[in-house]
Length: 384
Ligand SMILES: Cc1cc2nc3c(=O)[nH]c(=O)nc-3n(C[C@H](O)[C@H](O)[C@H](O)COP(=O)(O)O)c2cc1C
Image (cartoon, rainbow, N blue to C red):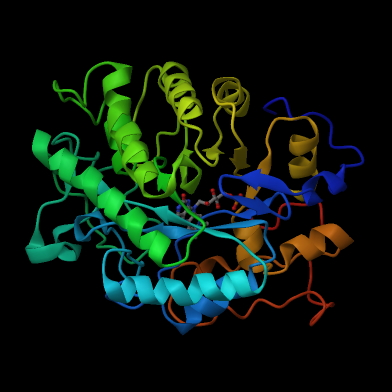
């Protein structure tokens, strides 16, 4: 799949070579992929539990934080963290200090949900904003299992005015400044999964006729303007991007994803960002190969990777970093298990979006609890 090649005798050592990623060098090719867990304080401030959770996973070459809202209108889920107040900066500083004390590295994933919010979560009961006033299909899946957002169809969003678009871009930049003060090694713009930058990128959700809509170039200009604005803070090596070409999650449809994302990849190459995270969520065409051809910086591949497939992807040159989401959620010492061939724990799905330590910080390290691992090291650890 995706030109990654044979899995016989995986070249595991490939996963344990350092790599320059923007302004930092990471010590291995394993990334903890961004995973929303909704265990911050209600005002979006990271707390003690969050500090411990990230500290436990700091053996990853790079942690990408869960999605963080850059302003109050970007919030989509209760108990998800923000990065737009002093309290947020102080809370995140404790997380980044804990990760750095263990020799790890951490980028902040900046996630503005745009039309996927709800007035119940927005200041003054405001209407969610988007590129255009296009409502997500009310019959489409609009929340994941047990995810604490209102269990009702999304409302019709309000289209941002031309000047307001620049305000939002400015919020992304201010958020990058706060991320720097909070001690992050960089920021990753979440332009995947149908969130705001993807609402601009995708034709069915972007019906604008100004400089931010119409052609591929114009649809991409919001994302690229955010990259440029955030790069002013500490250079382009402080900025990364995540895309999910061709994925229709959250009711986005692009009839020419190869064209759209080839353009995006080329423009990001010119800007020399830290890395591009590419999710292939069951897409049949060669997503990684297409993005590898378009983008010449470090590429992080995600979704469904095992140790064997990850090692093969790095060895074949298909990717430079491999993101593991659920693997790291359930195995805080995943890199140690992969290095030593130790078995894996399974994640507890029912605790993905709940509160408290259970199913969050209580997964054991193999060395503390060697008999609990149940999944062979080269298998995928989720139960489905
Ligand atoms: C509970 C959960 C929360 C997630 N939250 C985010 C998120 O905030 N941002 C994001 O870009 N991806 C998010 N993802 C997607 C993961 O980053 C990853 O792509 C996905 O889990 C597939 O990788 P895996 O097969 O290694 O688990 C989430 C996935 C899960 C399971």
